[in-house]
Amino acid sequence: MFKLALDFDVDPGILPLSPSLETESQSQDLLSNWHSKSLLAFVSNKEDASSVNASGYYEFWTQPDGMGYRPCIQFSEEYRRDSAAIVKDRRNYLLVVVSGGMNQQRNQIVDAVVIARILGAALVVPILQVNVIWGDESEFADIFDLAHFKKVLADDVHIVSSLPSTHIMTRPVEEKRTPHHASPQWIRARYLKRINREGVLLLRGLDSRLSKDLPSDLQKLRCKVAFQALRFAPSILQLGNKLAERMRNKGPYLALHLRMEKDVWVRTGCLPGLSTEYDEMVNNERKQRPELLTGRSHMSHHQRKLAGLCPLNALEVTRLLKALGAPKSTQIYWAGGQPLGGKEALLPLTREFPHFYNKEDLSLPGELEPFAKRASFMAAIDYIVSEKSDVFMPSHGGNMGHALQGHRAYAGHKKYITPNKRQMLPYFLNSSLPEAEFNRIIKQLHRESLGQPELRTNKAEKDVTKYPVPSCMCNDSHPRSSV
Image (tube, rainbow, N blue to C red; front, side, top):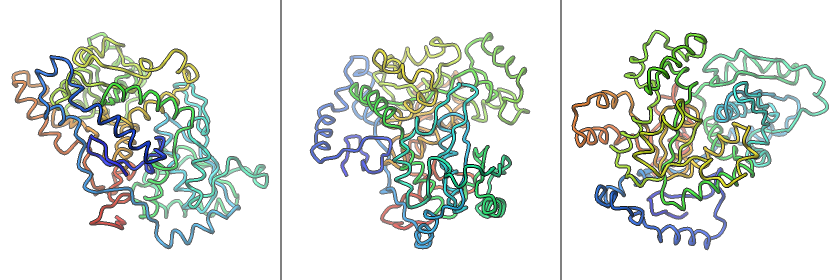
């Protein structure tokens, strides 16, 4: 265990998406290199030096107090006792087809492992459905490290690459109607007899179907899959680490997940606020394809905005970062697809924070070429660089933001800024508010939204892979929490 200058503990063994530091000398070399670049050295230009004092600069990069919470996945004796029989069983097999983008697929893979455990079945490596939007034909082993996945879960679930010859001619029972919040009891009652009879069960449409309120051991299994077993494939990991290192060489950096793509504005029922032309473009698309709107169709754009349901645009992100003390010299890595309106949509950000990069900016000629038409590869690279950042902030929720919130908590409560959109927007709309007062209010609204340990109290609604405390993390006060 070693401690970085930014005040958070890092245990290489719990960072499955990062290469481990194998020797003590390597750890010391890292520390020496980091300390040689003190944070004050990065306040280099006169504009920053005059506008940001040392304490203010440090404040933005200061990591939250983790309150001693650390990964703590300890299964019960009953779970461990049952494991031996479950991993040896070769009678029943679960096939799962997962859909959506890479982060959405990750969630479904986590649930697939848990459902296989509930049924006591072997899990066939999940099938990634070809994405109709991006045309990505990647398979599981293209995105994730399959050998690592099997090894980490070897004591929990038997995982096979394909159906054995004894089951290859079996017509699987196909299920597309798993309800929302399906409990282990429902899953057993619905599927156990069928899988015992047929030997193979095929599940589709698992997205967010499994209950978030599971028994303690199954919650721990979800964390084990999400934070330990699902490591990216070596080729993706290697490139992602290279890009993260290039950002790191520039100094501490902020990773910003911008959700400003056309489909995001259409699906959320929100408007980008760029111009009348773009607003009409979004509205027309929504009228032509009303099925794209994700709920609450009775609300107007303005009502959605005030309710905190809209992504932040570039101007709002800029004002929020400035209010939270981000200096002009801040190095920003931005993840996400091309925004509606192109580079012009980003101008409020790039004018205020000129050190602005994405994977295309950081890569050498030809480096991204093998991944160019693979949206999942690109999303995985964004995930790696974002996970390694000193500070992370999403402009909207979504699967990647949720996954990184849990991952950064599990990795030592690395700073994660959750925009308090509902409470802050009235102040954004108040043009008469002096900037100093605006900044004070915004800081106050976000004092508890900077990545501090957040206990998962509302079990029915909060996903343990987003809120791993205390189910999958413990401290000296709660050494064996089973909440």
